[in-house]
Length: 126
Image 1: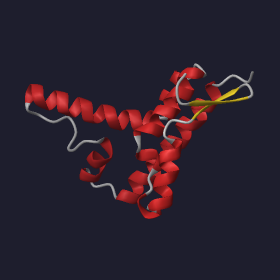
Image 2 (image 1 turned 60 degrees about the horizontal axis):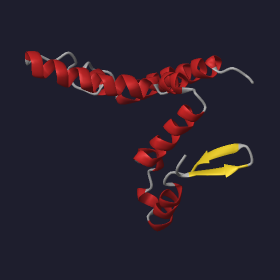
Image 3 (image 1 turned 30 degrees about the horizontal axis):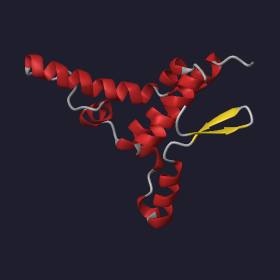
């Protein structure tokens, strides 16, 4: 498995870690570690290596819904010239419906916490 560090029995993903820390050192105000594909690759690699892909899908459920809302909106608009949502991604739809941004953020936090707990509940203790 490429870009991994073996530490005893543990296999640690190191995809792009040095680049991330280098970026933080040079421009700390622009550092956004989770917005880079390398970290997503590393999280996905850990999920695949530990055979917990479904758990990753559950825990990241809100991100999945946001992404799917864009895919569905674009697909449906190209076919029918009509929109399903007022605006995609989904959180913008709720803004257009009149929800305030703090309301959307807090409700999405609550949904994310519930999904994280559901994901943890699906894990088996070995």
